[in-house]
Amino acid sequence: KQASSNNHAVLHEFLLSGRLNVCTELICFQPPKSKYNIGSAPEGPCLIQELLNHFLFPASKQYLENDYSQGGNVDSTICGKSSTQVAAFSLLVALCTNCQENFRLIIELITRFFYTTNQLVISDWEFQPCIGSRPQGGFVGLKNGGATCYMNSVLQQLFMIPELRAAILAIPGVADQFLDADISFDMSGNVQNPFRNRSSPTEHSVDTVTSLTESLGINSGPSTSNVPTSNSRHQYHLEILKYLQVIFGYLACSQLQYYSPDGFWKNFRFAGDPVNLREQQDALEFLNSIVDS
Image (cartoon, rainbow, N blue to C red; front, side, top):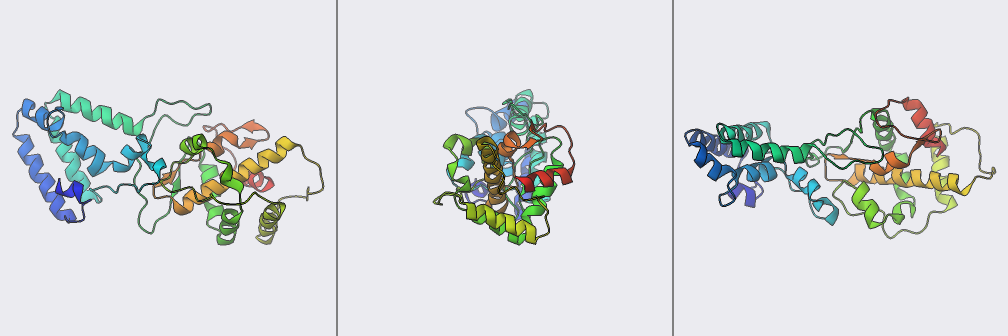
């Protein structure tokens, strides 16, 4: 209780590990009924849920409950180091040994953390890795939808170009058009929308990015500024720019370990075809498509 209420600020890692190990030894001598009362009985302390929801996977619990969309902070895990994590898992093993009720509850909770039953039109792998908080001073990753490593590598490298990153994030009005439904579907980071209170996108904004990519040596092909384009094609380019700005925003500001670019997956096209998340593509061709957009 002390560790949970104080967010492990009071206890040192070695002290927390020692207390968990003492609990494990005490649980080992308990009969199955006592283990049930301690671990999963509704009228008991529900130690299993406490360990999984607060000590080991608090961010995953928040993700499942959509708490990250409310603008609050991501709960940091109490067991932040391998020694305390091993001790917590050992306690879970002791609780479920010879106790089917506890074992069943652990399976149900872990399944909720790792798997999803919601199928998208373009679905990624039916696997949901546990989400942790962003490491202090570390970077935010991009979720692999199955075979989207070519996308992730290009997007991360573009993001790491300071001038390009600053230009994309500075474009006014691009990502302002998100509705609440879009945010809840596409925003898997726990930060406020960094694109609010901006004016509408202008031709000057697009020209700024174009001149920047040319100065960086990225060849976007022959100029098509004077070639009439359909409204649908122009809208597609704006959509890709919008989702690219969203990705950059969460790579820069998210408090979670990774961001899942679902909206980008749904809207991006290869030669007019929707993206198959389980089909590998060439990274250079993807880069050219991004620059063309």
